[in-house]
Amino acid sequence: ELHRIPHPPHRLPVVGDILGADVRTPVQDSMKLARRLGPIFRRKAFGKEFVFVWGAELAADMADESRFAKHVGLGVANLRPVAGDGLFTAYNHEPNWQLAHDILAPGFSRDAMAGYHPLMLDVARQLTARWDEREAAGLAVDVPGDMTKLTLETIARTGFGHDFGSFERSAPHPFVSAMVGTLSYAQRRNVVPPLLAPLVLRGADRRNDADMAYLNRTVDAVIAARRAETGSESNGMGDLLDRMLQVAHPETGERLTPENIRRQVITFLVAGHETTSGALSFALHYLSRSPKVLARARAEVDEVWGADGEPAYEQVAKLRYLRRVLDESLRLWPTAPGFAREARTDTVLGGEHPMRRGAWALVLATMLHRDPAAWGGHPEEFDPDRFAPSAVRARPAHVFKPFGTGARACIGRQFALHEATLVLGLLLRRYDLHADPGYRLRVAERLTLMPDGLTLRLSRRARAA
Ligand code: HEM
Image (cartoon, rainbow, N blue to C red):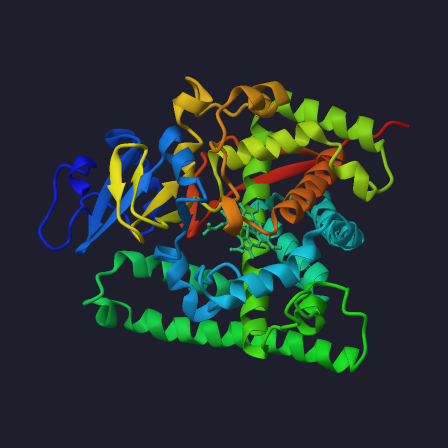
């Protein structure tokens, strides 16, 4: 029943709708098409047809868990060689999904989060030490680069007791380069025709094999170190790695296999830092460009946290306005820009588009978050007050989905929000942020979104006597 769904006007035989398409920016290309073609549209590339949905009503319909479920497709499916049946890339029917979900979910409880808080503070201190040096030397900071150091160290230390030493290096850790390599490769696989892939991707294939081998070696070493350390008995209630190694399913008594643990460690190291780094970077971009928003957020930090001393765990969620700043950044640039949903049975999407069981569509969150039907007439404007409680209540449900939806939504949501709010609060309290007046936001894509080339100058805030 695809004929009802609009597509770009100039279709070429074989290749399809690739006129004007740029392999480096599939999401931003799709956003342009969305604006032309409306709330549901299709794109064809090399014989495969993809349906995109972004209208608020249609997206809300796809959030109905009784009729739709996560679809492992496109970029996510391309990550299967690295992440296998790890939590993010597992098919719904794979038993390891439920098993790992039940074993790991308590690792994101309030109590668990409170336990991670001191480690998060440690890592944030490493960041401010570095930024103090840059500030003293009158040098700008590389925002996405430093946010990636911060978020990688945070998930590695809190989840796995591992220190990558990112802040002691000038270049990114090789783990990050290997990860960016596999993510970019997975994105490119979407846009290269299968028949040409062996030819076009030959060099890239080899590099990708090397990247995957590096990721595997790194996590194997992290796991081996923990096994050597804990020996036989431990209460098994420490961090995520302890849970993976030692906790049995509360009902079935089953445990994760060593191969699956390897997949989970890679999954969490990657899913646990890349998107949070982007979220922090976009938020810093908007804060540095919106003096009023920054002043209000900072006044809140000063009031709730005081002028110095380290915030306690409970004090982070009290930064309500700063949290809105983060939400508003994730609205405009949800760093996981979309997610795929498949029909669980034959059904009709939005009362209009029949779908067979197993048929799927991609929800384009970047555009769902800009649908005027949900967000009003100026969706491009950065305005954290959109997330004031009264404004949220006035909006339809299911129109803000930076963390996906349903049973397969992000398990690390609270972790990411706590970490990001904590760090933004610390940075606002410590520095004035000076945007580079010549910078125009450019968004780089590697399955995830990241502001490209964003730098800021800092000055230590004038302190009260
Ligand atoms: C799933 C976004 C942070 C771990 C997801 C999904 C989205 C998402 C959209 C669903 C994907 C789909 O439906 O295919 C984000 C964003 C983050 C973030 C925007 C930061 C701002 C984190 C963190 C962790 C994490 C910090 C771990 C510590 C995961 C895992 C899944 C997931 C394991 C798969 C869950 C499952 O299928 O059971 N995330 N995430 N994420 N995320 Fe996150």
